[in-house]
Amino acid sequence: MSAKSSEAIVELIRREFSEDSELVLSLYKAYRERGVKGVREELNTMLSKYGIKL
View 1 (cartoon, rainbow, N blue to C red):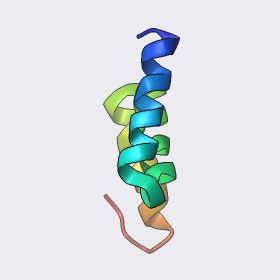
View 2 (view 1 turned 180 degrees about the vertical axis):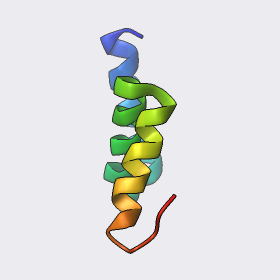
View 3 (view 1 turned 90 degrees about the vertical axis):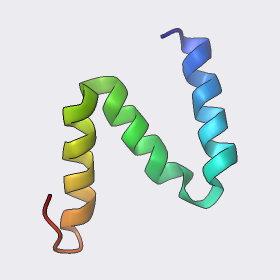
View 4 (view 1 turned 45 degrees about the vertical axis):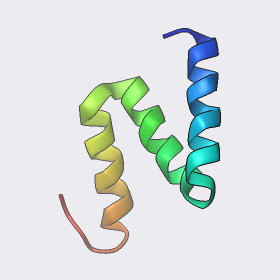
């Protein structure tokens, strides 16, 4: 994916998710860097703060 496409996706996420955009962006970043496994790891980290395990 080109840098321009990635920037467009980030802007779309910011616009569509407004208040929750940072959460969604962190999942998008995890997906881009580590694929589906990265998203699962990121979600697990986020939810573990509340005592929830995947």
